Length: 475
Image (cartoon, rainbow, N blue to C red; front, side, top):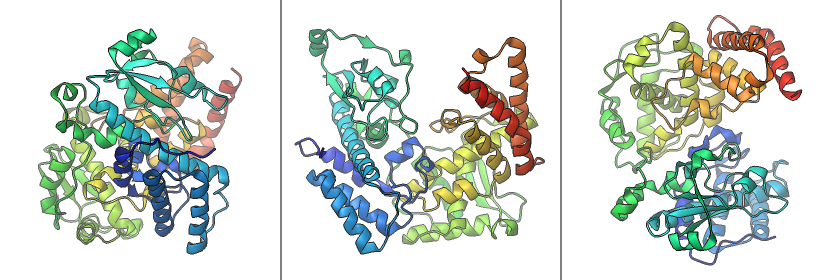
């Protein structure tokens, strides 16, 4: 069945789509939730010319309301023109790309329209299609009404999954009473959107526009400081970065400076001063933090593409920027074992979200996959940690808490998160529970330790992981 946009000029949808940056990715989860609202990607398309062509075809569909069949024909022309082919791009996959992107753009535009009228229609109702293709969680949300300012809309605003057809309807006080609907609170909802869709693309994109709206509307929502201003002029020197980044990222960095040779890439002091080493790390493909960062600034100012080490210098800087947002007292009180855990998960978060820093320069990541999988900092602990999360089939998104820059993730946080996700309390007696709890703690400790190799770690903990998974399957 062809899909078209509604017959009103979808200017907000067009605006949403046109502000996206193009990012090459091998896996959809390399861009985490909110970063999808600032980036356009098609998983597996690792050529920028092909991705650009697909982006233009989706933009044409949003502007002109073209159909899925027309998009498929255009896609075949792209393949022929570019001499590119990938068997993963089946008709079903093309439909998913088309529907998800158009639905995201349209619903982001709808969010902006509804938010502007929130003082007139302050109640929003989730509306699912309710046929045999509707997912159970989406069906459970159907007909539920929440206030426009309820935090539920931060995560449950459509689309809430691939090919999601849900929408949100804005209601006035009169409409609410006439329909006999009850207003609920989002904290009572016990179902979740599909993994990776727990965010609101419209809110992420348009929230700065709140400054233009009526005071009553401004009081309903807080401006998200992470929405970035367009860069005016990129600093050409490391010493000039401080003011540029403090303004665009709402930071409080006191100084950013290159220092002499050090045994670290970069460091953030207790006084929020970021120091950048001039050492060359030969075991890390000759990565030189200060030299590569200087080169990155020069290239971005000219609009030139970055090499991997240059882009990675920005990821390393982002790691320290996130540290600058954290409580120095809390950091200083962490025991050594917690510091290892904290740094490992901190680096995981930095690798997933450093695109936020690049966007401050008007730039999008080229090496998101390589940075996640082959980045230099804390590489061994992170490889082991990601391995056991994948083996346990646990999504680390909520634990990483990507929306909170100042979050410190400690050993107890990780331990409790795994216990909760696997529901270990309900499938063990008290004695067995404490035994499992201790084993999980030791597993996390080994994962973040520099003294346990990847091979030894997997060999040691694979039997325990299999036991946990088997217990889950038997329930």
